[in-house]
Length: 412
Image (cartoon, rainbow, N blue to C red; front, side, top):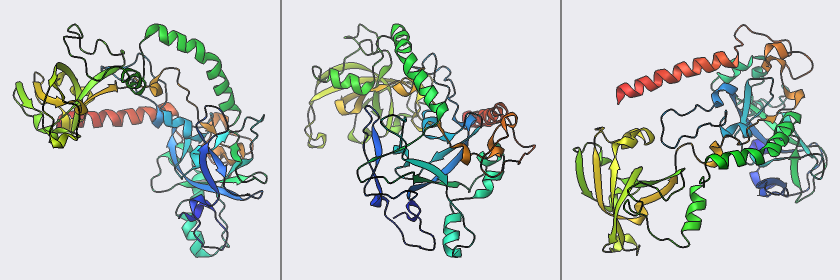
């Protein structure tokens, strides 16, 4: 139960999430899932409410990897989560909704899929029953509408609430749409127009880029074993697409082993540590009851400390010269995975843009100083010396991140 999904003034009744809306495959081709009405919804009724997490735009910048195996030459400027945030291009403040179902609402383009709902701030009426008011204030703090973007982003323990409200009567089974805004629409149209050429340029640079899931689905039809180093002509992962590599599970007990050590794989080694490996041999082995009838194929693999930078700290091999050989490893302990930063979400031409928050909801205090003015939500005249630029915020976050990195290295 989640009472904020459908709030009725002076009524403290809890309302189930599935009372009004549900997620199903969208009517828009290739759009994934959408939000649908489970019953007839009158005009102006709240379909669902969601709490919002304030974020500074600089917090979503995607740092370019340095010296990491499989790093792409160029990454999108922002993390993928930007696509699920609300904001405006003239503001450094973004709002991430984390309530159930709200992220399934798709864009109504004004053609066949016209917007039938809109976003509004969750109302606060001081005359309401104090118990109800207290419950709402746990999630909605309108005083944040008066503060500059940077101060809102750095505020902990406080958030905001917004409602998805019907613009007209929505029929049962009808998909719910909102307007993502002109800035989002322009960015999307440009992305679609340029995607074909960008994709061709990228394919020219890396014609073998294939998602691990796609590769395994295709190769699995004909191949049921892992390729050895000898079969790869002495070049590890030679037969794999350039963005994939072979990974093996191993035990944490290998952390402090001598420089060159050989272990026999045990069932307890599964689901502990995972790191890149080289398949040296493939042979038939005994199948025990613990293997659950798995293939009798077994492998000898080599683990190296050279890949310490892309594994978790607890799984790193201590000595830089350490080389561990593990025998009798089953197929289930060997995986073909995407290299770090190489999955589709990190492609240079991946779409990144926030959903536009309606202008009437946007406080002027949240806009960058040179863009303030005009109509908007409360706080139109609010200014502060503490309103810092995105670059200043980014430098501060980078400095803090560098300090944490230095501390981690000292601990290690």
